[in-house]
Image 1 (cartoon, rainbow, N blue to C red):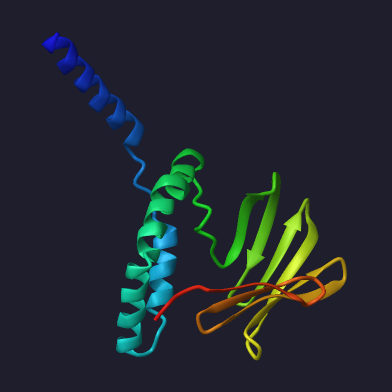
Image 2 (cartoon, one colour):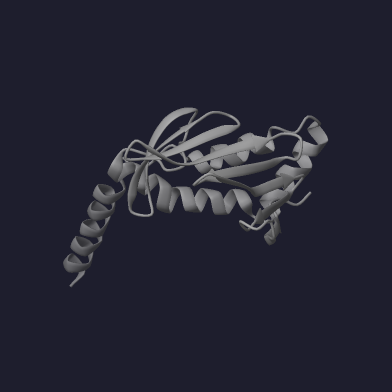
Length: 165
């Protein structure tokens, strides 16, 4: 009986080593949270936001989501969904393969080489605007630590704090 327990334990360890090997990943979501935290000018603001993000626990959730979802996707597909970068990105969205061409304040979404939508950032009102089928409306704004989402008619559909100080 004891040999069966030892054998079972060894097989369990061997199984985990095969499943989890090479699954480290790039932790892009955690890097993005860290970069946003580091974007504050004052070292006191950086520290306050850092502590807030650990108390909430944004860093812990980001690490968990990265490790469980995004890094697993990266392991199996070779692409991390959070690793979007300036330039061209090929992604799968709502069952469609789309091409996203972006820079800091502008993005164009293509499907089958046809423009589906464009997103433009307006620094004056700190908002992203989406243009689709010839119509433009404010999509979302981020002021301080509050993210506001808008409907196509301009109504506020969601407002939430994205970080606490």
